[in-house]
Image 1 (tube, rainbow, N blue to C red):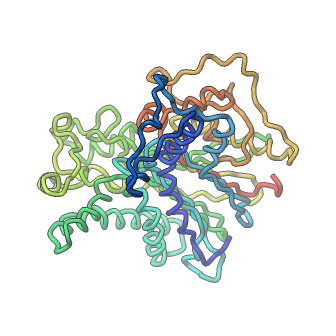
Image 2 (image 1 turned 90 degrees about the vertical axis):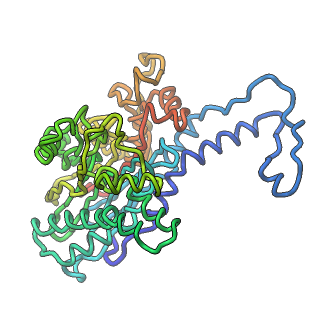
Image 3 (image 1 turned 120 degrees about the vertical axis):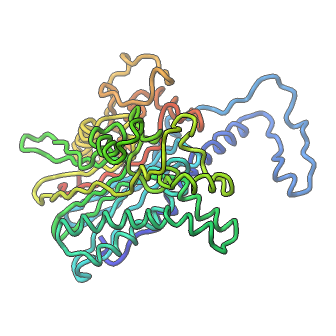
Length: 463
């Protein structure tokens, strides 16, 4: 991979991904109109042309023209709309990515690329992959695609080239960036900036984002993973008997994780209700970027709510016992793993939209089977199970999108798309169609935004 460049173009791409569901909504609506006997005028376009719309063109029919459901071909097109597959170099054979929005705009973002070796520019460059899961808006997850890598590179430039120093530098980069976003709020509102400029700076701190970053050093073969929130990194490694072993490289940082709940309760012993139902005063992730309303003191929060449109969360009605915090931190949990040269491996990075639908072991099994299928070469045929045993499709409170091993299918050339499809229903086309027919906001009740990257290490060429 190039050692002196880092692809930041994906930041724009990932933001565009957030608009995907809205664009598809328009596409399906337009398609429905084209199939109608009469195509009505475009009121917005007619107004610009100073033409009074002719409403007679709407006709007199009492039949409602609904948007059509997506076809099988359109499902594949939608799953691949933001997919990519790129070659790696040496141990990194290739990496695949995909994103499917549920929110509109999509609150997930991602980045991938390379940057020069922070300790010796003459050495091969490092590779980086990241996924960001936004909440309370897309603004902060989008900002992280542009800001996190520069902060990490700056911190690494002052570190020593050993595991402990590198991990500490990454922790420092995360917290320093979050402080710049959140702790600057008081200074921002006291500044001479215009109201609009103040609002623009505050909106990122009002939003929040979970971040998962993986850095690979081809010289040491070390894979360093830093995580805040509930995105997850999972390593699959081939064993001597040909099976794939699963290793989680991250710990879900939420109020439902016992170690996180214990840490927070110990930090705030006089607030016994701080962690309840797996949430920290209502917030599920316990380590995040942004989320200023969980980090500012009460006086600043009230001022922001009264004069700068600050969020009303956490709810004073439901969580009135909260005090000043800060209850959340952006300090990540960091792990370092050496990738063996003689052992095929792969890394799955994904936002919680994927992990809501399958376990880490199931994801590794799916990718392992995909690798074997790919090894059959260009003449391989899709693998689908017998569909006669599938029950009638339904989605709602009794059933959200979930991977079912008996419905596993192999039909996509992109490993990330393969995971997303199987998480939506796999070979059960009616289930997948149903999952993608529901659009925002209804889609949020059955599936979250899903962003996946799969990085392959030391796979035999051609597989």
